[in-house]
Image 1 (cartoon, rainbow over the protein chains, first blue to last red):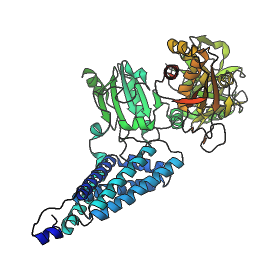
Image 2 (tube, rainbow over the protein chains, first blue to last red):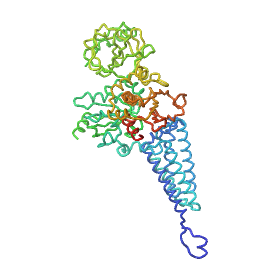
Image 3 (cartoon, helix red, strand yellow):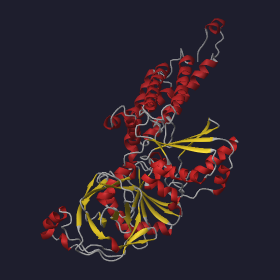
Length: 315
Length: 277
């Protein structure tokens, strides 16, 4: 609480939370929550964020794999710092610099002809580069409000601020490292039992899956394990009563052909636009059984056994 | 169904068989069981000695890994066995047309010539009857670039011809377009290397071919890869995606159509024109 000079002179200690100060806090909290949400959504699938960074063509895939987790941790820490009021002017200024860097990258993407979605909020929330630039300018507006409104406000005490920052860095780093192994695919992807083809955005693309039972394999045909997976699926499909198998992949048509001609799978493989299929997995391979266009079972990492398929039928 | 005896792959015969396969026409083919049905697959193109002959067709067999290649200039049909990595000459009298496809009418004689095939990334290549044959994605053919008319397009690109043939436009939308009174110019920018165009454009072209209204004029432009920087009629038109169908009524651009899964182009166009009218 601050005491104004006039109030002190008059001996009347009363709060002087001006409108600007309130607006500054709103800007700080809003920006902090945005960075926090953005960082956590990216942390859910750091590999995808690395892929998206590499997609800009500014740095290579290997450097992107290192940059992505660092950027995620930084964003989460910045978000926590803003929310907790750690060095508010410094964190708001850092936010502006980060947002300007994002705008510059998006502008480069547009200039280079990149039209697909960015990775600003992870893989599961899609906007175009133009939308992102507009949003980033709005976020810069929030940061400016925080700077203008919080002048003279020191924020959290240094000792507490240090503890908050260290905790945020440690926890976010741990989350980024652990998240690919956490069993959260059903929560963070669209693919789960009960979903329909339309929910998966596949109804118009693969209308043939709307009828009957199908085992759908989400695979990366460039994965060295793909041949082994194809052999397992071929064996599965040859069993009596087994549903027909179809492979869906984010790989290119050329990669599918290279796989088709060398491995010679007995099932059809189709390329699906990456921004559509990516919403169905964090890690490949993933498998699911469709019955009359509705997902009845999902299997991660390996094809289901014949017994699993039977049990999914009875369920 | 098994098509091949495997005895020729016995270890002792393997080097001889390999040598024989490298000499076209010398190897003895395995006996092939009859009955396999092959359906044309227009996703692939057949290149023969660097050209793409009309009516050279790639067929997908009903058995996994089995394909049939019909090159009109070849005396025989060519049966590709991807598992055995070889191509067998099939006398044409053993192949009969059935229900839009082909069927091997009887067993291929074991004396038929066989040829080695090689896989180079996404391309299958072999040499048969002194002709160099490559099987590649139709999207990987050299693109059509610049202004093109529908007849030239469908004559050169079977995937467009067959896509048009398979599509049944919405009759009510065609009737609505037939009655449209204003001058409409449609500039369609598409690419023969673009999978979305391959899905969408045949529908659009079939629909436009059904419209008998002289007020509707369609201009087709094939776009090259890297069209953002390549010179051509797409420049200065704000064409960022393909396909982009620019619709002008009385000289004024009113909308752009683009490919969407499950799109019905004639209905979309008819609805927009009706709203404008």
